[in-house]
Amino acid sequence: MGDYPWARESGDDIMQSYFRQFNVKQDAFDLFNYWPPEQGFLPNFLLPKSKRIFPRKPEPLTLAMLIASAQAGRWLYR
Image 1 (tube, rainbow, N blue to C red):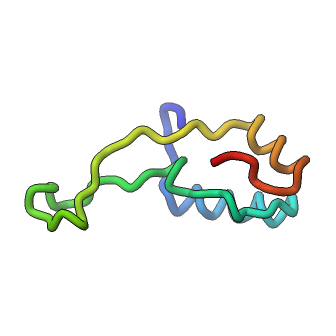
Image 2: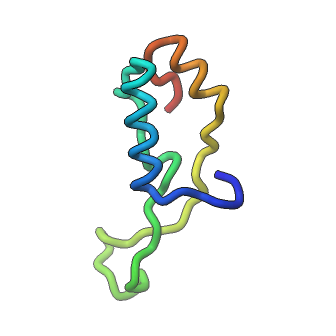
């Protein structure tokens, strides 16, 4: 993600444009791999177990991945 990550909404908009522009099937694409949920206002100990969010690092999303998937016509990565 680099030093200046995008908000998840911006990432979703950009990826949806990419899928449309390059006619890439997005069935295997999971936005949360690249923009995982962030902890909200309330700390985990105040939330029910089903609502707790534990921080995790996002997977890298590279230009090489975008190019390879565009050439294949479908998202190649899980």
